[in-house]
Length: 386
Image (cartoon, rainbow, N blue to C red; front, side):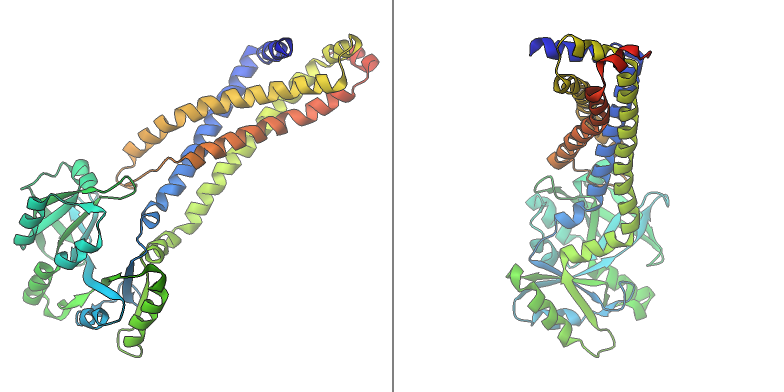
């Protein structure tokens, strides 16, 4: 057995340049596959962290249409509802139009108890609650822009005209690594008060209502009960789970995500062709050697196993190096795209897929050359000039 493995190893690295280039191709393909799979998973990171006990109520027509604030009390009266909070998208930019991040005006006293995954220092949270212009900043956002407690953040919104300034009173952390903390929250009451002064017709309206419920499995029934209250009204509602609401945004770019995932597999198919071509060239050049081995008593199965071993060794070495480098490449890519992806989760499933692809590449690359070498006649093989 040791002799067989040594023979496989020596044969693989006989043509050093060809072998090196093939391995490099496998490394690049494995890295590209792992990175693209991670990017796809990053799009779904927000929905995977959604709670089963939170619903989102929005205007049935579109998110761009608001709902009267008095819906809040009606929703609260629905059996099974434990809390209701307004959440308005602000859409501001910080200093430069390129500096864009999520900002929400919320009912802080009822909103944050529904989000236990956001961890506050008690004193900071109290300071935030006392300041009408106070803002709560996620740790990822604070690290990205260097925000500190006491800073003033000037924002300009395309939705709410004028210059707005907010005081950083709290920086919240994530309960675990699945929680995204790249958002800014401030008081809905402050926004509403300003609108009453500058654009009274836009005051007392809510973008969405975040609804806390006591039982996740009852979400469909509670959703229907909420929407039934506003049926045939001027602003009918659509209530769905937080996960479904988040996935509706992902659906807007679903074609792009599908294309990215498809490209990741195309890369593997291309490297399969490259590896198969390498093994085919190798087998064709050494046909006389295989005939000699047969003449010396090697069984056809032994010759085929040797070629398959070479193909698998190439695939394992290339994919193994690629898998080792994947965490580093993902980390570098995340640092360059942190303004787009708050989380870039590299999970075990990605490595399993990379390993599975390596096995498939080795199998596809070796099976045809191995079959041909096993069937070659000794006389024909000895006559062959590689």
